[in-house]
Amino acid sequence: MRSSYTTLMQSKYFNPAFNSAIFDGPVRIYFAQFHEALALKIYFLIQQKLTVEMAKAKEVSKAAGANILVMIYPTEDSFLLSFEDAAKHISPLEVEKWHDDVVIGLRGPIADENLDLLVESLRLTMENWRPAAMLKASAPAEV
Image (tube, rainbow, N blue to C red):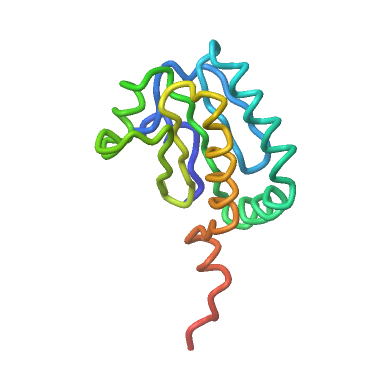
């Protein structure tokens, strides 16, 4: 399923504070304007550290019409509204599948020491991303 912005806005993952976004191929970073510096830092880390994975993710995204959504929640409370199970542990981020997309939610503005965890989560997501739409397209036809 090709998720639209309208569908995202009606999902549990959207927060009204998201008034800005950076789109780079399959990766879409949503954030409140006051987190622009962090969003740009994440964008540049992706460009520097995940070039091979981004190339693969672009192919997957194009074939399946899916995206990886990085959501920088303005507060921990707003994060917990979208990721209910996150209250059980104290990770700075959560990763969930949503239709053919993958949502990576940040528990508020994460500290610099957690950026490596985010980059590694993005790497693993990109390496293992198999949207259902892409799997159906590559499945052999039934007789």
